[in-house]
Amino acid sequence: MKKNRGRTGRKRRRKHLKSFMDGVNCSHKLEYIKLQKWLKERGFEGTNLRPAEFWGTGRGLMATKALQAGDLVISLPEKCLLTTGTVLSSCLGGYIVKWKPRVSPLLALCTFLIAEKHAGEKSPWKPYLDVLPKTYTCPACLDHDVINVLPKPLKKKAQEQKMMIQELFRSSRAFFSSLQPLFAENTGTIFNYSALEWAWCTINTRTIYMKHPHRECFSLEPDVYALAPYLDFLNHSPNVQVKAAFNKQTRSYEIRTNSQCKKYQEVFICYGPHDNQRLLLEYGFVAMDNPHSSVYVSAETLLKYFSPLDKQRKAKVAILKDHDFLENLTFGWDGPSWRLLTALKVLSLGADDFACWRRTLLGDVTSARNEQQALDTAAKICHFLIEETQHVLLQISQLKKDKENLKTHLALVEMLRSEDLKILQKSAEILCNLNLATA
Image (cartoon, rainbow, N blue to C red):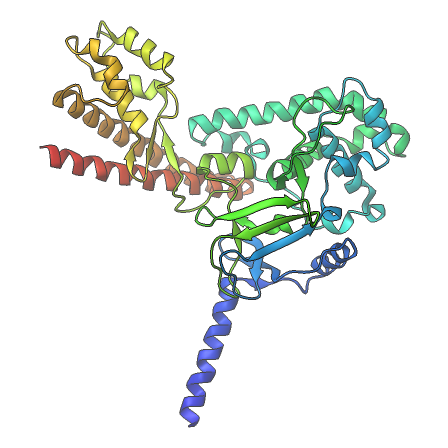
């Protein structure tokens, strides 16, 4: 009997330890106690979710009971949501209404976040502001050395994101100055570039989509943002499905899961079928083994494998450009995409077959030779990208040693590039098997 009790005791301890490996409950921490109290005052009736720290994803929400498909994960009352309506009913409202040219909904929310953060203890939103990240890992916040080791399409978008925030700051300075009567301190000190960058990243990474009717005081940009305290602790997984929407009857934003979740496990939602480049650009993280991930092939890389002496080359490139076949050419977990192979088939057409380009674009087989050439070129491009990715991973490894302060951001890009390498190696294996099958 004693032996059995000992085994049962060990089993219980192992089970207990496993739950802590899944996630460490953080709901006892003061900032979360204050947040829960604040939410309760605004009509939030609690939930079967607890804030926790998870090994793979950082802060998230842990299920305190098993969830079944169709279960309500969270219902957040309208009073808890931070929207442009919240901003207009604050002391900023009158200034926004009077200002010309009209302020965008995004800028209104950014301004509110900066002002409330500056207000500190006096802000009614303090319990929420206290649990927001202090820094972000969106490409806009990355150092030049980190941006340089991003894949080319993402590097371009990261630079555009940085420029967009810089332009928003430049164009908003006069508006920020108009708010001076509200503050004892100089508005130039409060509404500085790093404060705007933080506010912009908060809105870009944490808002839920919620369409609001257009208000005359705002510019014509869509007003579709809502910050959702507590709900925004839910992390992304590409492998779950949820239904999320504002319920007009209950006046709450509700999320229902279409997946099961065990007790003590992290509860996930899906931000959309995004690849890792999009996730890093929009949210500042990478999802491992992401089924939606792919590696992009630039037009420049594609055309390197075709002779400039081909008399039809110029016409072929023009055809691909006109039919939008020079972008979104990818390698995925299932090999080269149909779009990439189609572009390669058009570029591989011989002088005798060139007249058949329309059929090729529609997916028809022109000749066995054309099909084989396209597969061979795809394999060459894939191997080139494998070597390029391996070289960049070595660069990142060296940078991590040289620049200790960039280690966290470099580790994120390293994850992205390592995932790319896995996809390319899988594609190379698929192409090798296809070539063996046709040999």
